[in-house]
Amino acid sequence: MLLQSYKITRTLPCLADPEKLRVIAEVSGEVYEAFPYLNATLKDCLFNHPALTLTIKKGEKLITLHANHITLTKIDDEQEAEALLKWIQDLVNETYQNRDKIQPDYTMRQELKPTDIVKLLPGTNCKRCGLLTCQAFAFKLLRDQIGIEKCSPLFSDEFTEKRTLLFETLRNVGIKIPAEFVESKKE
View (spheres, rainbow, N blue to C red):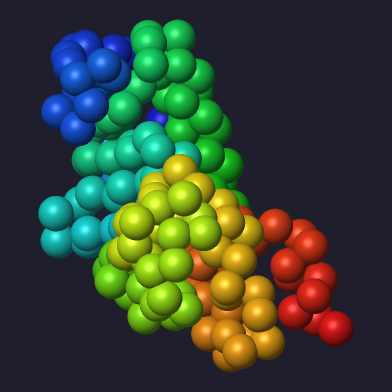
């Protein structure tokens, strides 16, 4: 077992959202050996091999694994932090245990930005989603604050090609596409 234990050592106000917490936990041993395997199996992560960090996005939460500690951001309370740390412990250990079946990935993926998404949206700024611009929609979409189905023009025949590319792009970074839209793509 690579990650045998963890201990919360600091709880601070979150820099991104003062209503939430930032939690730092020390871990037993150095867990960086699992990073390339996690990078190969998780879609929604960012691996920085030279810095020995792996950041996982879980909803709006960011979990950054360092060689000997873990930082959690946008945490509601210590109970949620404990649950996330337990999840990470299980994930790291299971992935590392199965490493002989996984091709390690040392590459650093480019983080998807709202501007990347805007290029694949209709670009009409029609406000039907409830937001002022397609840029605002893209920003919220990447943060799981709005669903793709709210962009009704995207589902017209006019934007079939953009929709297909957008769905593929979102799936590649771990953003879920509602099943009814995936099924319509297969037809």
